Image: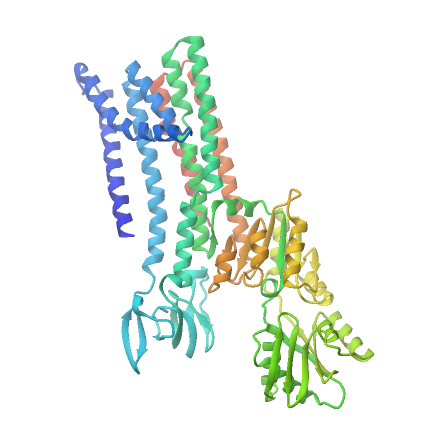
Amino acid sequence: MDIEQNNFKRTLRAEVTLLAIFILAFGARVFGVIPEEFETEIIGVIAFVGLIPVAKSALESLREKRINVDLLATIALFFSFITQEWISVLFINMMLSAARILEIYTKRRVHNSLKSLAKIKPMFARVIRAEETIDVPISEVRIGDLALVNLGEQIPVDGYITKGSATVDQSSLTGESVPVLKTEGDKVLSATVVVSGNITVYTEKVGAETTFERMIKLVESSQSAKSRIKTLAERFASWYIGVMLVVSMVTYAITGDTRLVLAIVLVVCADDIAIAIPLAYVAAIGTAARRGIIIKSADFLEQAAKITTLIVDKTGTLTMGHLVVRNSHSWGETPLPQVVQMCGGLCNRSTHPVAKAILRYALENNINCSTSVDVTEVEGRGIIGISEGNKVVLGRHEFLHEQGVTMSDDVERTIAEEELRGNNATLIALNGEIVGLFALADEVREGVAETITALEKSGVKETIMLTGDNAGVAKAIAERTGIDKYYPSLLPENKVSILAKYLGHGRTVAMIGDGVNDAAVLTRSDVGIAMGGIGSDAAIDSADIVLMKDDFPKLLELRSIAHKVIAVVHQNFIIWAIVNTIGLYFVFTGVFDPSRAAAYNFLTDFIPIANALRLYRYR
């Protein structure tokens, strides 16, 4: 970072010095300070110095079979030399030098925002080694180390709390201003700050592997990546410059007026658009990053503005992903506490949300779970095990049917009733007979319904929910949130085939999920958005856009930024068209000679660039 900063400063100093020389020479020429007999030599040398970087860039573009704005500027300088239009020569050089300074300023601003992030990363950690507490550089911290973090200190690593509790400020990663309570077992992340409490953290990731470091790298690469948007700006400049060169040659062939051709070239130089379009996207991506929205490329920002179809994974996105047991039933001679006890024995070895919910239910009802052996978990389907010599099967009714379990009319009726209430029915069978049922439900996230409504008003034409839950649960969630369509009872592999039905046909399809179970769908959609990317490698790797916080309404913020940048780009094209039309009118009516054309171009260059810079101050 320091080497880059020094390069920025050195380049900026050189350009500012060059601009100052051009301004002084311009002033000296206007006020007659330069002796007439030395005018050609003095201004010629100064102008030649300014021509070198421009001509070099133009030659490189021609070698690559491209046309850029520097080619037009080189032609303008060449004609100005021939006609000895020294005011034009100096104006062109001032214009180009000022454009380079603005470009350097923009890159430096991006660099500084990244550097300010880098400044807050921890440099040292307090760890326990050989039963002693020592301070070590962050580079010497190892996975498995226990790091001690006290009030007011930064958490130096990614890991989980093994002792204590704390309120943690996560604003450096999520943009949220309200600190979050963290207790034993909760994940914590590097560069976040303990604002109350003291904790011991087990180290899972250090250095470049932490979420914070990866976020910085993502933002840095998104700012500098050669995106389709930047290519579009260059293609437009190439096409436009080619047309203007033809117009200039035709004008010269008809009139033979070199000064008229020079004035045309000076007015239509498209250096402002070539800078302003990419600058708008760079500014918007930086603004989004400060708000906890990581956009991997300008292309995805443009796509976010065009979303017509939004596909949403239910669990963990529309809902909290935190199942609770709403109701329970038992049949036969096995009492409910014993059913819960057996069930808990199977769930002890599972990380599935249903298993966790049943374990919490057992704990809340002071039921000690038995120990099960030979436990087999069929991913996304259910669990089979042996408890006290009995075969126990836990899962949805389809899974139990596959295991040869029969269901009475009473059980079928109870399942239907719970599903009508919007609950998921998880059954438990003992030696082939149904003995219990747990009705589970998930809480809808705050602000989801309002966000769906606002997205539809902003141009999203259809919203679709994918879920592994039954039709009753899916219908209840869709009605509560305003989702247009839902697909229930899905397995993970079904989601890809449903996405394929919507891709193309003039749609821009966005998929939003947690990035963990939805990686295949996220990577295949036009825009893959992972929510809750904080601490999730899968989310950061698989998605095009990452919402660092579990906050569904952040979609509106993303959409707003995307619409704003598109609006600014359109405004800049309109500004450019108006400015050039006025300039050409004055050229062809004889109001603008080459000197005035150069001055006009120099002054109007700043309008679209200033408009793009407004995105840095987006609220």
